[in-house]
Image (cartoon, rainbow, N blue to C red; front, side, top):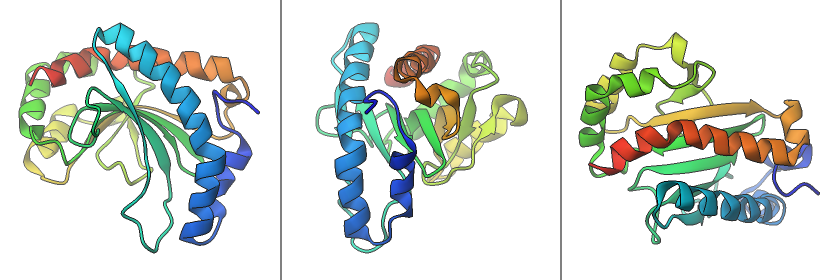
Length: 205
């Protein structure tokens, strides 16, 4: 079993019917990998950022009926939680892995971060074109940087309470890199490296 990437069996977990059965599969098949990958990436980011970072693995504890359509690990500079802080994510839907720098709607200073990004929009424009951007962490839809108007996205992030900002990469489940766990881990670190300037801008707010 590869502990640093994901297999077809991991993606197939999201075909399991029922909350309890799907959560049991997530806990036994996916979360052990999240622990291994997350510990490696948390150590890596702590060294890169020169600050202590903390690993959080999604528990989906609020769910009482509908099983989750995705699951993830998050890395933030807060030990108690990650949703109110800029954070890094690695997770999967049934057909893809996502690697994000995430700013979700629970951020208390979301508008300040949006304004900072508006003032430093060149930092966003320097993100590689093969990266994607999303405004809703619950949906698969994401768009390449050359397909979007960054000013419009930042305006929506600023003005719309529920609007989010997620920047990173999507890896389709059929991508050969998922057959090479060390290559996947290296690519994940490289992705985070490209996003570190944005993280620095955000945490200064």
